[in-house]
Image (cartoon, rainbow, N blue to C red; front, side):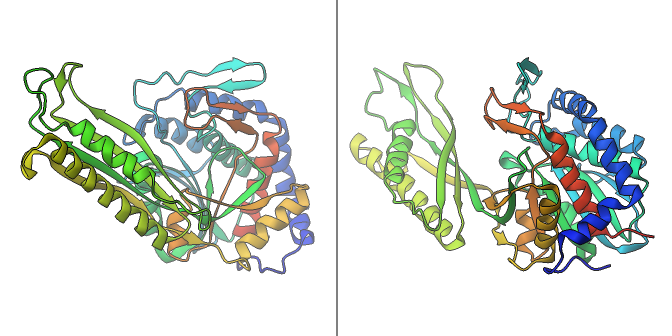
Length: 405
């Protein structure tokens, strides 16, 4: 069965939901919200900073194994679990990222605050991983057989400097077999992310002779040079349309309060809905930091080689957009209509970016529940209503993969 056409209706989804096998899966979801929350807590308390996701992948693999998936860890570190279909030439991929933005030493233990779970990463992407675990179990309990192969993956490298390395490897590995990609990211069920926001990330470093704050006063200061560049770039106009943004996220340098630093490093994130605007922002950033260095050298009356500037790319996320008449979008909307879920189309930067940039049908959906404080130490998640998110994923999975009679 091909992907649903744009004319797909709620009646089609209703027919799928009424299939006795899907009824079993939906019933399991209704009865096992507490189990999903337990898995979310357990997975979240396994640190998974970027480039160190192996332990969390192993824990999710055990859940996949118990659900009867055929599992493997690929060369990139992605966990993949498959339910083979009758036609293995076509694959529907559900993926949730394993990594977090937090360094290895971060306390990721979960505490309760009323109905909320509070911990770094508990929503992004603890909610997505729990939904993936729940989807694996619901599929096993339903005992459905499908025409397309269903692949569930916990992937690496979505956050920070990972540069989408996990989803890149998955898409390249499955190649033309991919019929659709659904990134499960965060909890919210009120959106369908159909457009990927492009981003470019850079590390800017300035090095100099350093020195003592008193006896070498007047030497050019790398921190001051970089600060001049940051201030200059911050005056650059950022348009509302296409929506764009920038962030100076990390800055490091110096050794003591009474030492002129020998080096400083800053990491910057640039984003835009439009690749041309992103290129303009990158050009403005490079010009600003170069001007900052020149101004510092002029103020210090130092030779041009007294400070060294280096701008290094940390990665780039491509943009992409799902067509409004996409069968994948029609399917998700039909599922939402059946479940009485009101959703809107949204733009974001997720694992869906990469397949969208290649013209592969892809969206990002939430796993259910509510959350907030993403990327902060006070990140929180409320599991109330999480069943809706998982039912949404389950029905979309059954519809996209096609039930075998």
